Image (cartoon, helix red, strand yellow):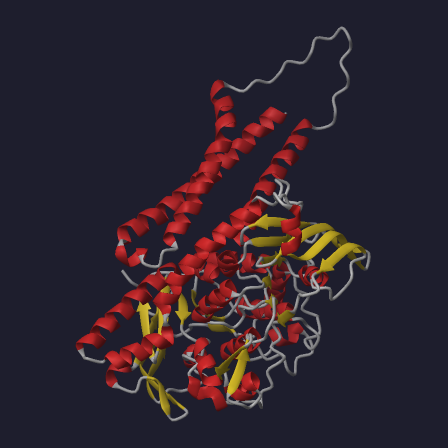
Length: 607
């Protein structure tokens, strides 16, 4: 039996700027009911009102009509996208500010797990440190309902893994706004879709959202045809273009897999950058950046060591690793911003780069959209082609009518999209993106994926967005903080799989060393040799065959996940969707069991 909601919004209507953001008609009023164990993804375009909906839930703003009901005693905590650290000397001052502040020892307990020093001055704290402090504050309140607005922004992969693990064990409800598809896929069991003032709900996690969205849009299309509203329908699809874009991206993904296969053939089994091509002349002619045995040290710590790589025209390269592992240093070495201590970086003289960083520093709040894109004019040069500024805005999912709107009035996501539109117009053959997915909605991420795929130059991407990297890059550079750089053909999932295999080997090696103990004294010439330890027939068979079975299971998991990536499958064949999902879960469980069994046998063999 379903439990009663802990929070409800009933018949909500809200006006903003003289128009109805939510509601406006009796059938369009907004309703929301949150159960005690709901884990909901809140999806919607930038500017659709997601953050405003959070403010209604928190009772920060009052609706023009409708009711807000909260179960007595319900604690609501919020992880804001851009928390206010003004008037706070330290991160701990921020965590303990306000009437709903948690106890300091509870904050410290979570901060220790996140690896953040709460005595750090707030003014000089990095984006990652501020984000961790905000997480510690929100989680330490022990809320019944947790509202999270882009929780993974500025976090490295280790912190994201920690947050996912905490939320998987969390016993309350949460609603999350996020561009991180992997994060949403792993954690949510329901989806809220905010679209044109309507809030729809479906009790399926984010993995089923795209299929649901396609179904709703198809139903709207049929309804529009029945009402003879074809012109309105065409305008709507010109604005969205969701289905067409996803189908094009499926073709681009196939091309990306081909690029990865070619790259894999150039990298030796150890993952070093010794490239093996039939024609060395051809390799050199395509090379734009060549790093040869590069090393860089800061304050006595080896940040990058013995790194070699030949980057070719058209490569899409992802750079991943924990904060402080050396990602920015590696990027600066490859682009020539800093010299190596030893080794050499050679950059093609024809290389012209554009850098899009996560600070969005190019956007002055008092400037208009027209000022940012066209310096106040009507036309913009896009890689040598002249376009009208309003037409170019449509290419980046903007309403052309915002051309004279001030930057200050745009949402964070809209500002990010505007910066992308400006920078992609510049003529270049090297694109450097530093955390490009922060503040972007899912449709803009699809657009960014499309633009990068069509870009004729080379792309370097630093990102923690695992799904985005899997959809975009053909080569991943993984840093673990030791100075060594893993070079893996493929995306984040390929790098993670390599790390998992290496961890398994290390566990076997360590277990074997511990089981051997100190070396035994040499036997006397007359003493009989020690008896050898033999495995039983079943153990020996498992030891020989399990590695092949583990590889088969890994392949089955990857194949199943590729099938589930089809946006039409959930609607077209729901039974098959569930069957494959269950098969993936079973394969993962069997793989874990097989790995544990093989490690046990390996200890006996080595012992």
